[in-house]
Length: 328
Image 1 (tube, one colour):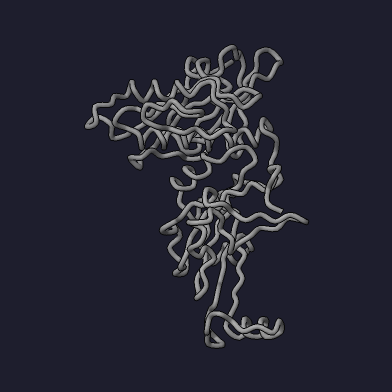
Image 2: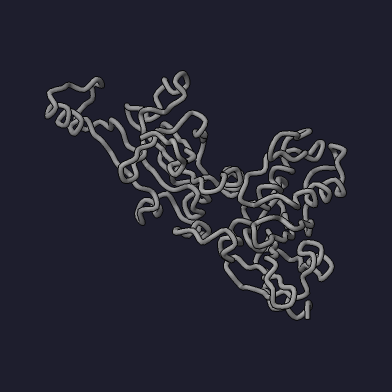
């Protein structure tokens, strides 16, 4: 029964096919697996007719790769509440031997992720003792982070598809390679340019003069904004590893907004480092507005897409509009 179910699911990105013993380890108590082709592909795990949760391969779900740049595949079980019930390494090629770490250390780290919620970020740290922290493999902190990121990103994608965490109003997981121009053309990146002539006219209507002296055809400010939590936007702009790293650190309901800008005017300014608030940009939803805090800001130094224009500033903002007490 198990073998028939396993053979029914085509492997998307991994050559490793998990066996019955491994699946039992990640979904304890399951006696039947039902393959779901996806995307992303996964298995529904049952005990009799009762759904226990799901099992997934990170290699199949998101094509995960390790710090080495070679395939990384973790088999993960998740219950109906979004709790990891088990995790097993299927394939890894991390450069650990020179650091004194061993494959057994990686195996133990992965197994130790059991009991954690995929809805919550996992902070990997040396001698991690804080809330949500796990101990990194000694001498392999970067690899530990990459592995935890892969488990969370793949787990969340499958859990959304399976309805374990509720279905998102937007499809966050659909992905296809896209250029910068394609993202702008289809509206994935919204853009707005303010030129010198427009600025002068708008201020003149208010009886004011611009603080910035600009030629009529000069670019005073040009912004590009997109929802970076969506794989179509975030993976194309940031690359697979950075996208996984940033989205894995989001808490329940949180989203990432990409903002890029160029021109004479900075959307970040400099006062935010002192005040703790990026007061030159705000996000409005219905009758509420939100100004990002400095702790909501992640600086980006470069984009992964080769055809992106030269931008003066690149930022990610963690949006928390739904929280009580947000600025209004």
